[in-house]
Length: 209
Image (cartoon, rainbow, N blue to C red):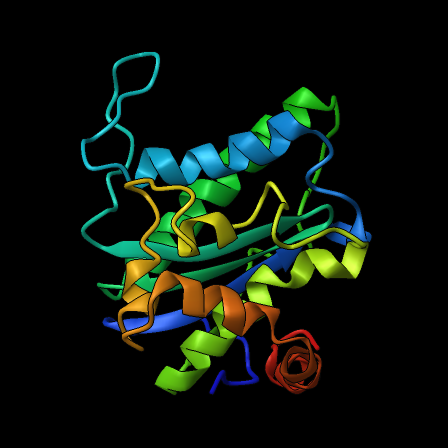
């Protein structure tokens, strides 16, 4: 299960629930472009081929070091499920994403200063069953703001039920652990009664709860 403390050093071949929120709980995704820009950073860093910036300089190519397994962007925070292939993978990915997005956001919204309340928080997941449940916890977050998780635009849920596919996110790593068909995952998330009890239990283990 996730450890309560905030992890600063990361182990190879390990899974982490990564999350962060805006400083003073301020919104960090204010427009559709904001959310798209944040997700595009993962596409850049985790693409199969290395990407170059406008000056033709190679950007960090991290696909061999780390994988994104699930995500959900909320107005003032985000959740990620990460598989850390190499010890430095998660740190490299999050440093690159957070720095680039903060620069983009401040420039786009004509603001200065810190955007997030910390660099990010990460909880190590030591139990395989919790990987399954954490993915559901992440995908059900839109309900907290009155949104339908099945149609929410900024979560990886569509990738888990086969509606979307992309090289920079790997839902199969979770789905194949349980030998479940895609339809079974949809039923699992839909299980409202179990979800409510589980969400309360999971909050206890989050590092910023």
